[in-house]
Length: 240
Image (cartoon, rainbow, N blue to C red; front, top):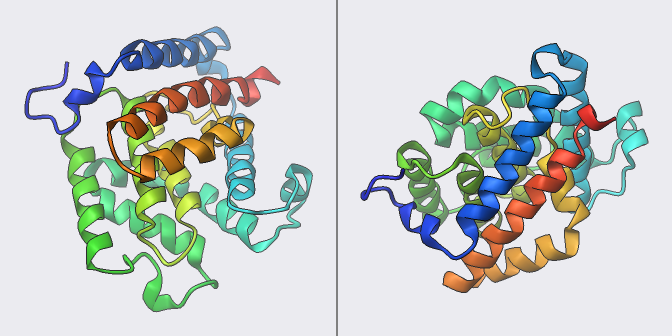
């Protein structure tokens, strides 16, 4: 259980949230266990990352199809998402020890060739830097369930928009990274980005609610994200 000093401990008392996340985690665990996690292939992880990159790019405005992404025919936004996907799992040790460094690297991958070198991986202003520092400390200190933490970090990165570009793509990549690093999906076989795309109207609406601040918006976002993670499990290459 979260300790009393945990900055996110209070989230576990929000109505319906613990049961929603327990249900989502159970669904992911069943998928990975029943499909034989030990027998999965690296190609399945690669396919999950590719599907996730495509879905994240579409949410960011890309018009590239999944087939075109597979073929390497990419618009700029899809190319950014794919660049991140090729290095993302290598950042697992980084997100657990230095989240700020992981945030910076993911944005550097996304923004390469799009924004100036002096903007790559750097917060846009002092306020953004402070928010990222707070978020990093939260990642390092909280003991709330990993899915809940990933959802909160995702929403924070989107709404704070700390970088000069690609904040949504960065947020969704960090979300996936946390699910791997926190042991929810160590082989990265679920596709949370596809879950958000499948629920796009609710995704965008709940992010707007979260950005307005207040308990109600946060509560709604957390409930929404639990459903999105279940959809992300359905989108896994393990399901065909």
